[in-house]
Length: 334
Image 1 (tube, rainbow, N blue to C red):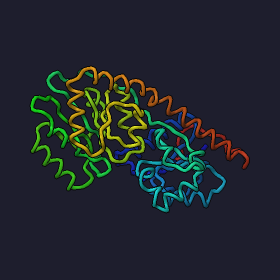
Image 2 (image 1 turned 180 degrees about the horizontal axis):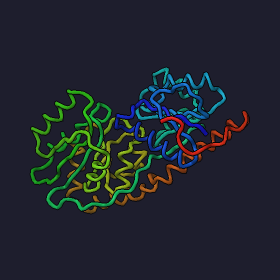
Image 3 (image 1 turned 120 degrees about the vertical axis):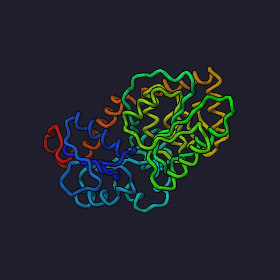
């Protein structure tokens, strides 16, 4: 089957949408399909479109629906889709109606959809490859934040929390991610100058991010909006406990009973939770145990199986229009 994956993120951009598109392309090729990843559909024939982002990919979704009304069209909902755009953006709402199937990236995402839409929605957790465990520092309690500096990530909440820690704390925060504008970069620089506990490294290669994550004691995700963050999958795969804001996307990744949750936007509560994890071994062990129970959700074979089931489901729908050409492994346009 020829499959086109549409993502609004260009190949040079390192963000969640692009990483998801590339990983899914790899999985689908393993299943024998020919896959093209495009920022905007080029109009070339495909047997199926898989679009990431209901609003930003709407132009491609609409054109594919008009030109190929009998072919499967899958739309994957991002955090800004689920928790903002589908509520009041007409393009995003139209994409939901045009889709043959929808995908959300964690179980709580289903709650944002009307029953009729929920009935055609698949939950596929994003996976992460296991990383070799590393020995954490004995001098510091290292905590990392992974994510580009943009408003949806509430990127400086952990830095603000670090400033509230007691003098005796050994917590040090390392932030990895690109500043999307000069103002964000200036804020990060200013916070580093004020607080030696906080260090912003900017954008790093994925391999270096994974290696640094593996030797941290905790990862913090402070976002105000997430569809199902791949950095949480990375932490679970690495065996690194997570401290997370209490948004639906994070709870869907970590579980409704997860102990490492703080009120979104509250740096005082975040600081207290970080210090508790640092100083109370039984609490830290609880976080590790709870994350270990969620780890199977983010195994690569689990994500591959979810994609295989999704393609099989839409293939059954379109089978009444005649079989698609026999698939051939490889790509038809990178």
